[in-house]
Amino acid sequence: MMTGIVKVKPLCSYFGECGGCTYQDLAYEDELWIKESELKKLFCEELEVSNEIFLPIVPSPEPYFYRSRLDLSLRRVQGQLRLGFTRKGTRRHVPIESCSIARPEINAFMPLLEKAALEKIPSKYRSANLVVKTDNEGKIHWGGIGRRSLKLSESDYFWTEIEGKRIFYSLDSFFQANLAILPKVAQSIRSLLNLDKETHLLDLYAGVGLFWAAFAEEVKSAWAIEESKDSCEIAEFNKCYHKFDHVHLIFGKTEDFLSEVLSSLGNDRKVAIVDPPRKGLSPTALQRLKIAKELNRLVYISCQPQSLLRDLKEFRSSGWEIDQIIPFDFFPRTDHLEVAARLHPNH
Ligand SMILES: C[S@@+](CC[C@H](N)C(=O)[O-])C[C@H]1O[C@@H](n2cnc3c(N)ncnc32)[C@H](O)[C@@H]1O
Figure 1 (cartoon, rainbow, N blue to C red):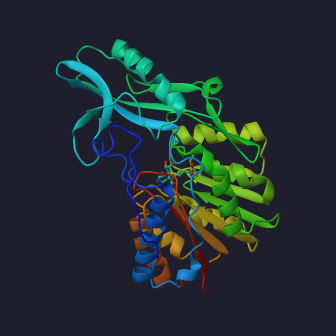
Figure 2: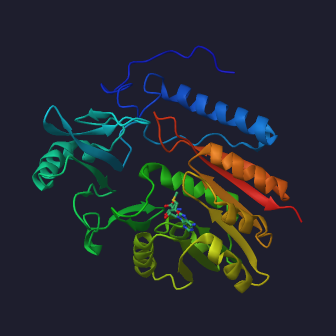
Figure 3: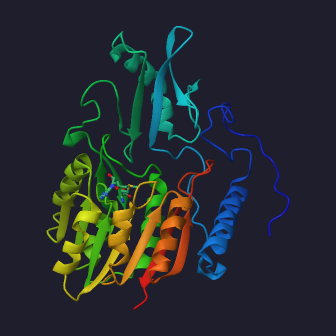
């Protein structure tokens, strides 16, 4: 039990006002302790799992200046359009000039972004939602005003590297916003899956291919299912870049293609990564996954512990066992937590 949490001075002058951060007034180790103990308490009580199945929380290498993506809004304040955040849970616009959890490249770009957006926004627009991203190279692109403004050409794609493997992403597709923690995440997820050359990997809700790209060389084949056309386009680029002929990309919904993929793989060992959006699995996807007992292991990754908990209860009641849980602090200073849970079918 940790005692004596002391308050520290928040780094950001907007702390408490913009609503994005919760823990800037605590030391990082205290924030980690709070997140980890709240998760354990919730899961032990609600799921009746033992404390021993939790591995220690994986901290972010950077507690500040880590976000490679910001969602900003341009709104009229006293007659003038200003760049800012929409306060969480409200429609209130909080003008900002910098963000202490965004990467330095994004902060340096903020004045130019405001200027460029003001030049581009049609006079009849009262507001606009903007996305700005950066990458390992410090490249910056933004979009949000006008049709196809989030579309990048291949030569402009962002990239990050995990264990020397380059993974490309764009403005119009989902990609994890804390690049520095990804190598540690890949290591942990690999250890949960226990991959080898006899194993087929199913990467469900695959995005542009973060996980299959990191693990493809270690498995017999990989099967990615993703419903966003924009993400699939970049996934195809990632597959070609690495010349991964044994990676199969499926454009569609997990719930529609899962059983077909599983039955095509016969009796070989199969493991799955399931990484749905915040709301968790749809009733149909959950139904299809619960009966997928040909899977040797399933690692469910979630950015919303409440929806993870709801879905894990469903798996449990259908005879799956949860034997390991790892929290990852993807978003220091905020109240968000990423969690991976490993499940085995109980035959
Ligand atoms: C949290 S993201 C994870 C992406 C990827 N695993 C990563 O870490 O970069 C969830 C992804 O699921 C996709 N998605 C949402 N519903 C889906 C469905 N029913 N079937 C397949 N993909 C879906 C979204 O487009 C998004 O790319």
